[in-house]
Amino acid sequence: MGISKVGVVGAGQMGNGIAHVFALGGYEVLLNDISQDALDKAVATVTRNLDRQVSREKITQGERDAALARITTTLKLEELGKSDLVIEAATEREDVKNAIFGRLLPHLKPETILTSNTSSISITRLASRTDRPEKFMGFHFMNPVPVMKLVELIRGIATDEATYKTLLGVVESLGKTAASAEDFPAFIVNRILMPMINEAVYTLYEGVGSVKSIDESMKLGANHPMGPLELADFIGLDTCLAIMNVLHDGLADTKYRPCPLLTKYVEAGWLGRKTQRGFYDYRGETPVPTR
Image (cartoon, rainbow, N blue to C red; front, side):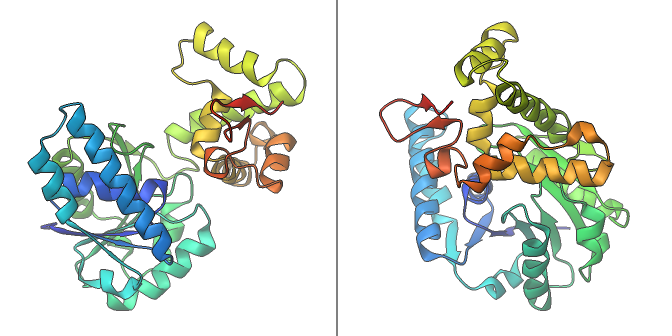
């Protein structure tokens, strides 16, 4: 299956990063969102990140200009119908993803591969709601997409070998590394990472340590580049909670119960960096712990 045109649904943190790496990899990218403001911000973010790569001599000015020229934006989901590959990168809610697929399917070419950047939701279940379960896969990029090398490839029960091999080739063409994961809740990375973050929140909730002491302990004591609470803010606390709920519901094990403090932060709208408050307050010159 030849892939040259790629449609990306969702222009947020993940969507704009995916558009960035595909455009830089030589693919024509059509980026979709329901908000023109989100699309404008996405293009500005991609431009800024490409400029940073030029300044660090990771890419040339010509490569930067060519990549930007390959990205177009649209508010009309149906315009993604001519894509060879569609990557859904919307919010981590199954009902939202199913609604997107439902609107998109009548416009797709029969041979188009349909994928989801979901970090936890069942690929088999998402695929079953489409007309092409054999051409449906989980295509999970890590955040920030231009920096992180790993891509999780998750096959549903019906995914055919040709689709898998095509996406494996696409990952290699982007200069990234693929890891094949079975279709179990949260796959590999988040199956391991999110319970650690949730336990860090429990450690805060139970008064074992402060935000600062927990993060410094893991950075200096376990050689982590970011503390778990800092990382949670970077990912988005709503996303962390959604993944923990998928693990808790899907595996029926109490060890995956989301910490009540994590739920409280999400209910308050303190979602991390994207809302300027989470376990840290980002509204000043330097982040300040909120507990």
